[in-house]
Image 1 (tube, helix red, strand yellow):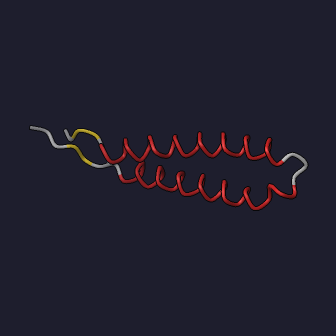
Image 2 (tube, helix red, strand yellow):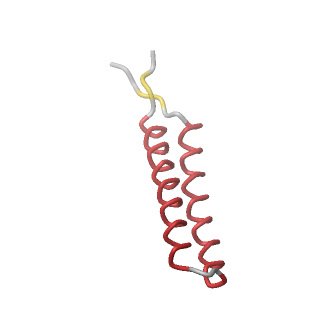
Length: 70
């Protein structure tokens, strides 16, 4: 029977990406009222933050699942 070993580097990188995506979204939320088109700005920021957050989530899951030991 083979155990799986957690990949901490991938897990930590995924969690860091999630934190950065949320931080970027919240930072841009404070800058949106100064924009010429706040709705379009937040739509773009939401798509970028969502993509980075989803990538971080996938990386965190793969890091937590880990790989097989040999």
